[in-house]
Length: 158
Image (cartoon, rainbow, N blue to C red):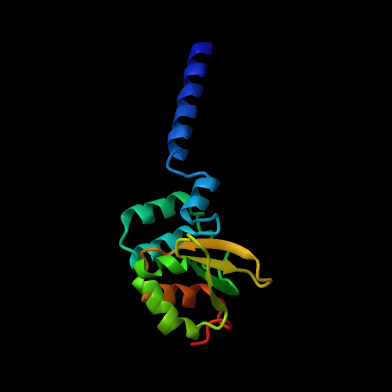
């Protein structure tokens, strides 16, 4: 009897370990550019815009399940597009967004930081950092659409 209880407990623990092995730690998610603010529905939206299965898989390993009693879309008051000026030549879509699309968003500013990969730093109403999203492989239209969906309506000016 004691042996069967111990065996069941061991099997239960193994099952739980397997269930959570598909999740990344908070640190791993942050390193990948995802935070706990990412909803799983956002990963589905990401999959529509970015055809990188590994990136979408990583998103799903970091996302929080959408709840029925909360807004399914997290919104922000502003954003910083951060990129290394020396690496801009490697990101023509980012350059095109900065030159041709950025002015549509009055609460988005460009910040140049040495060796920084292209990312959007999403800000709360007090201007504090809330979420960071890597945008290395995004097209300018995807950046524009993402900002239209994620910035509060009174912030996006188009």
